[in-house]
Length: 417
Image (tube, rainbow, N blue to C red):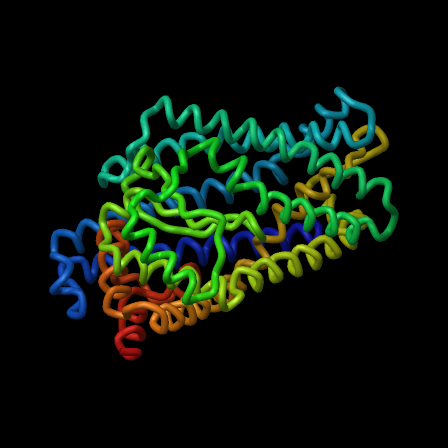
């Protein structure tokens, strides 16, 4: 076995092992605290609600462990099991070397992995979410969403892949830079058109018609110096009883979207406080910073791919052998995005720390423009209604959680008052 084969298998084993170990820690920690509500929440969240959240979190964690094990087995099957090599030979019989062959290879692998993921997606929706009272989707809606997503992925993804592969094959040694410019432009366009053309394919959006709440929100926007194209309500209750609010769009297409479930559960003052937090992300340029970080990382990854794709050991070390008959640039993309997560997994705590830092900053911003008490009460309601565990394992949370643990977040807010 080649050196790179051993290095990759070691990285895969390490990443998979740490994921499973963290999940087991998380399960044990939640179970240990299942029968005791944290003191700071005892007046607002009942023991039954706390147990419900613990059981929900444990069910999702077990599902995550199964998914992790399956993904590891799939990667081994694709590489050392010879599936990628077989797919190369198959697509070589369909097309001559070039972009069409590469797109066929990527589409075939994408469809195959999506089909393999279907049982997991079905169980998440009709098993876990259904059992804990969150799912509102019918089987028909699930299948319609699936078909819409597949059509959208084909309409947007196939031209994108074709352009990237064309640049890889025809643009010379600096293809990675040209591909990056194209990738950035593509994403900025998607951010702009998403609220207008894509999101309405899956949900209905209507203008906020609560005059009193609308006036309250408009005053908050004026205080914060924020302009949006509309205040919209989304029919989130058609699919789930989870509640949320978010900003969408880019530039002049920015919209504020409220789930109808959120409006039904929170008081107007609490909605204002939650929105003030979201406004904090925009006013403190968190969104721009995250986009810039993603674009910078993608540039580095494309440069690294450009260095690796000319190295024979990169392919042979993953059990892929190409010749004049089976030549395909697309296989470099497949291997790279299969390999790189195994080597970058240990960086997760850094990205999670960066995200939690932004959450604390947005909370502080909200405290300056809305009631801290209302933000705290809104968060407690959201923790309860979404069955978010109040007792995550600290190490698991450090690796994965983009938001601070509930106890720490509430304590920070209380210190502001």
